[in-house]
Image 1 (cartoon, rainbow, N blue to C red):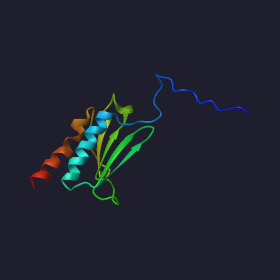
Image 2 (image 1 turned 90 degrees about the horizontal axis):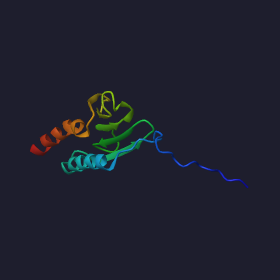
Image 3 (image 1 turned 180 degrees about the vertical axis):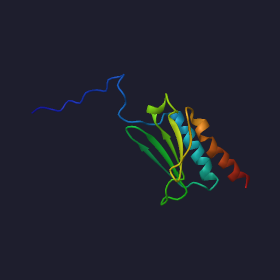
Image 4 (image 1 turned 120 degrees about the vertical axis):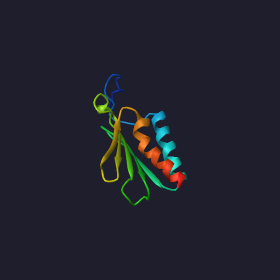
Length: 115
């Protein structure tokens, strides 16, 4: 009986799945928690694919996401690997740094808390 040998991943090869690093996810979940505390968001979903990692925030679980935060490492050298996509699919912000891409949502949070 022969077994199936699975090769160990070799460093230097492109990863087979895009994911969020710990600090990136902490930053995103911190914003999510503050939006939940403000009563605006109620659910989230994370998709980790071969080309993109997506964090989607929902007002209610049955709707389309209000915002999607996308990480596309293939665009790192071009317009930036981070993108903020609105509910209609419109690209709201793209950049090289996560905090600058999250800035429109942060401003919205300040307006929600001030009201």
